[in-house]
Length: 96
Image (cartoon, one colour):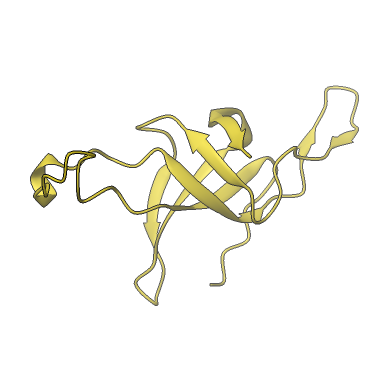
C-alpha cells in the first residue's frame, strides 16, 4: 500500500461486516450493514494549530477504531484493497 495521508487524515481498513446474526441466521450481502469499525493502517503528521504548532494525532497505526457510518472517502488501491480516508475528528472512539 502506497498511501500516505496528509495533515490530520487517517487511512482505515474497514473490518468485515458480520455474515451471521447472533441467532445463527445467515445474512445476504444486501442486508449487511456498512461496517463502523476498522483498523488504522496509516496516519498523517498532525494538525497545525492557529498558533502554528503541529499537534500530533491521538490515533496510531494498528489502533482499532469506531467511526461514523458514512464518514470518510472510500478508495481502492491497485491491489484491490478497499480503504477509507477520513479526518481524525470523524473517528468516534479507539476500541481497547
